[in-house]
Amino acid sequence: MKNLDTSQRLRETTRLLIRNLGFLDRSEAVCCGITLTQCHTIVETGRRKQISVNELSELLNLDKSTVSRTVEQLVNNDILVRQPDLSDRRYVVLQLTQKGEVLFGTIEQRMAVYFTEIIEEIPKEKREQVIESLQLFSEAIHKKRCC
Amino acid sequence: MKNLDTSQRLRETTRLLIRNLGFLDRSEAVCCGITLTQCHTIVETGRRKQISVNELSELLNLDKSTVSRTVEQLVNNDILVRQPDLSDRRYVVLQLTQKGEVLFGTIEQRMAVYFTEIIEEIPKEKREQVIESLQLFSEAIHKKRCC
DNA sequence: AGAAACAGTTGCAAAATACAACTATACATA
DNA sequence: TATGTATAGTTGTATTTTGCAACTGTTTCT
Image 1 (cartoon, each protein chain N blue to C red):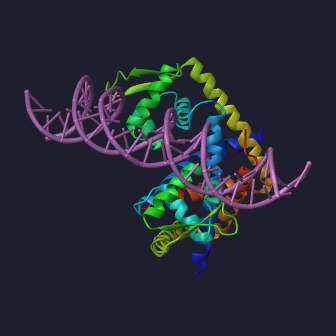
Image 2 (image 1 turned 60 degrees about the horizontal axis):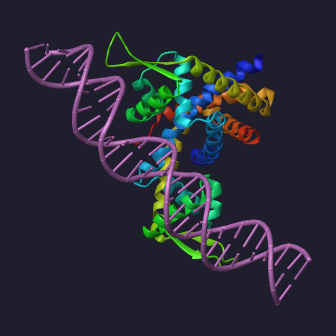
Image 3 (image 1 turned 180 degrees about the vertical axis):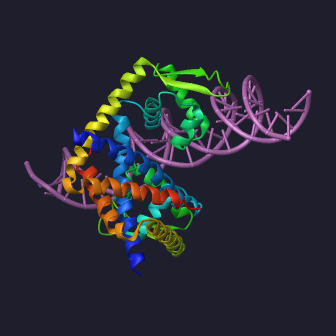
């Protein structure tokens, strides 16, 4: 019975959290005049330095056709370079251009500032606890993917 | 300097969390053969018993036109009833039909089970901490809505 | 009474995404 | 080595999801 109550509260909290995270996620992109998916693509590419359409597709949980077209846009905007992977020519190697690196840097910095501000809203002594908890929760969801 | 590191870790964790929550959120709807927005609409209506298009629009962070059409679909599927609000005829009063109540119940129960499973993945002694932390985080984001 | 504000609907358009068919490459094995 | 199978990526097509703007009807404020 205790668990039911706890899970109910967790659900409520999650509901709110999802809503707030939605704002956060959107702000990441809107500020830079690109779409959310483009933004995620840039960030993931920037972090790995090299990435394939397929990896992006899994990472972003999008169909590979969607990713392929997003990449196309970014290539046309001189943000990504797309080359065949010489070691396995089925793949393409995606990398940021110089312009892409700049944009990536801007996004990263903006987010760093933003998250610093968020951290400061959390009482000092709770900060580590919050991070740990988010991890625990995240993993718990991951293990229990329903359906 | 410490804060920068902490915020970096928080960002990483959030990134993962968003991904996992995406699965969770989608599973809520997919299981019942309705769209995510329809599902949210049903749940919010079920909780409040009565709700207006406008309230839904704020709650779900969607344009009122989008909500209006979603409601239209649900009315056509005999899940919602839509009546003019007699105390202020600009508003409509939305309520679940009997069929809607059943569906709402199904969703609620499924989610209750699901969240119970998630809770069980989290060590007992950490559960309260996790809920508290999610709240803290959620509020922190809310206070610092950027842009 | 008239103006301003607000809820909801509808026309129109776009943005985002998926599915399926196709191409090119790689790999396994017979 | 030939051939069948698996895989990555692209493209055609369709659907879904959503938002903006214009409009209607209602209320509220002055």
